[in-house]
Length: 275
Image 1: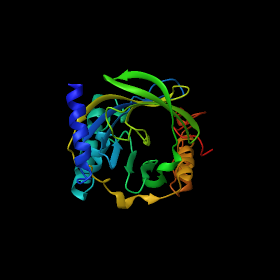
Image 2: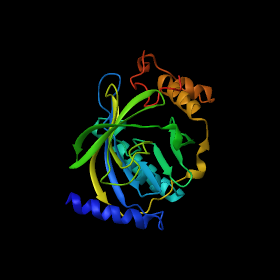
Image 3: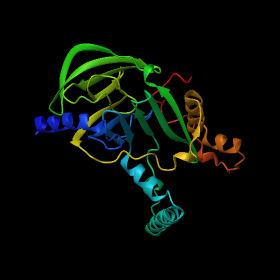
Image 4: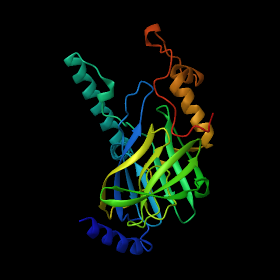
């Protein structure tokens, strides 16, 4: 089955040059990321890619963005949230984490045509922002170690990128120079990438051929372009002191002593060079 899938993908990679909007492959990844208390986040992402472009995203988040991209859809989604909240009240157990909502806000779009990565995200809950960076910021050193992932023979490669040292495993059997998150530029699909300490990373847990359209980001025109490090600093401030962030924006919120936390439980970001 693996060899059949590889042959089909190799064939469609060539065809994709003339049909840049269609993917040839869809890969699902499990994110490796821990809170400061040691609990794993357990987020899931998908990569839709062809030889010239890709989109890395959380499927549920994209579904919600699609639903709320029109006034009618947004109104219906809010009604769904309110109904779920009222049901929790009736049951006497309120858990806001179980409300219909976006768990992740990150999108990463890569374009080989202009060698550019565009990252879309949200500061807090209401500040959609994006930034771009060139492919050239990620430089790899390919090693000679190998291991098997999802029945594909993979080769080791390493890079120092935005504050962390990364080890990746890519398979030349799938000739797409892409991977999870911002990873790209190796002669084959990246199926795994981990930091040196192992607290952050992505591991592929499924691969299939796909002819899905690589759609743009819903509401892309509402995102404000900012500097990457400035965005990360703002996100850090929001994570460590959310009430202070809101007050700084002129939003007054009553802060109860029992709601205050002495330290952030969110841990650091996957990029650390903003500090």
